[in-house]
Image 1 (tube, rainbow, N blue to C red):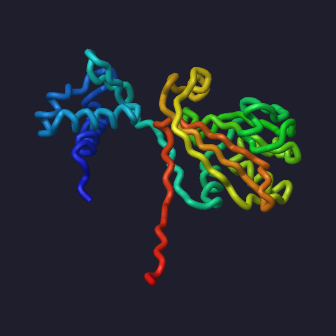
Image 2 (spheres, rainbow, N blue to C red; image 1 turned 180 degrees about the vertical axis):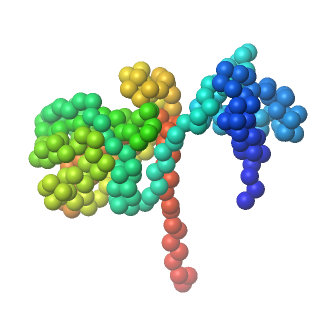
Image 3 (cartoon, one colour; image 1 turned 120 degrees about the vertical axis):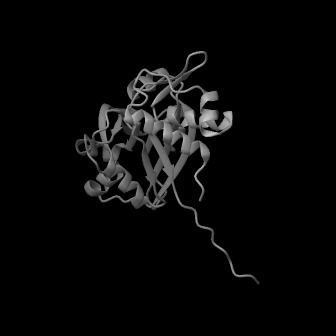
Amino acid sequence: MTTPRYAIVAQALIDGILSGQYPVGSHLPPEHTLCKQFTISRHTAREALRRLEAEGLVTRRAGVGTIVRSSRIRPRYTQVGDTVSDLHQYAQDVSLHLLDVEEIHASGDIVDLLDCAQGQNWLRLHGLRKIADNPLPVALTDVFVTGAYRDVQADVEGSSLPIWSLIEARFGVTPAEVRQQITATSLNAQEAEKLGAKKRDAALRITRHYQTDDHETYEVAINLYPADRFTYSNRLRVKTSALP
């Protein structure tokens, strides 16, 4: 597969930043210079610069140009998988650091979110998911656990195991099905502050409902990922039937 021109240009500029050719605070060459240097179109030049901005290396401003803001590529977490066991691997790569824990009685929109009865008792665990050696959190997390399993709270802080796995270990309850919904969104001011991001930054919200064989929801996990820190990848297989 041929490497796209914008990717080649982006890598050349990244190499220049990492080597010190373009130190932090300096300007990268303007678009018209890049077009001449690499024999590319303005569209290709803009896409290359957009890639650098997504990596957190530069800032682009109209009338100012492209300024180098960092010489370190921003870490990005990639979740790959298509089974519940793959969710287990994801959780082992990150740890949950609690910011708040509270008991709630479901009402209003929460009833719809949790797919539960009005007034049902739940434990809400609110925190940040982090990767070792990365100062920026990967996600802002809210996990709701039905009141019957509230004691799992004692096992959560700093654990690299998913909460559904902790519930399984403590109570012997195994998820028979996981319903997942992925939504594109943007960060509000409070979310951005906790994540060390900017208000209105693009984000991905992944909501998972964990259910028993009886289709009872006992855990709901909501993870909010800044767009530049997370990639979700899975595999889809096409099944073909025999021709008549």
